[in-house]
Length: 105
Image 1 (cartoon, rainbow, N blue to C red):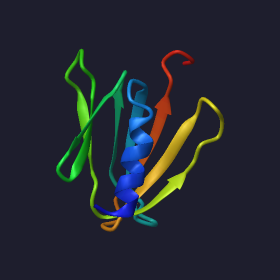
Image 2 (cartoon, rainbow, N blue to C red):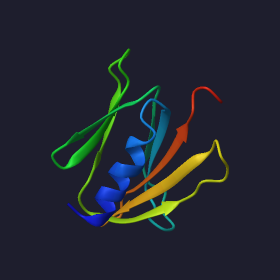
Image 3 (tube, rainbow, N blue to C red):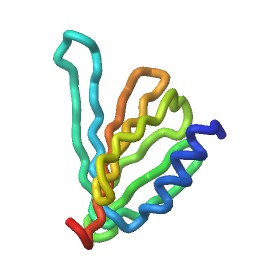
């Protein structure tokens, strides 16, 4: 497994049980692209072959992130209760993740 993948898993496992907001961003310069957002409350985190899954136990909502092909992880945290980072993949997909502690939201 790649070094970035190991770092990502280690970091995310520390935040299991918190709320996750993930936004897929299309960063094609000068072009309006696609995007989506997914919000998971009190996430359970599952590590599987080649991916990490965030699921919401009560509703069954989930999203998955691939663990291979991670080009870069950029921290965008701006405070103690605003944990955020962007994952950029080799295929130029970009995922922005915010983590919220439900006890402080």
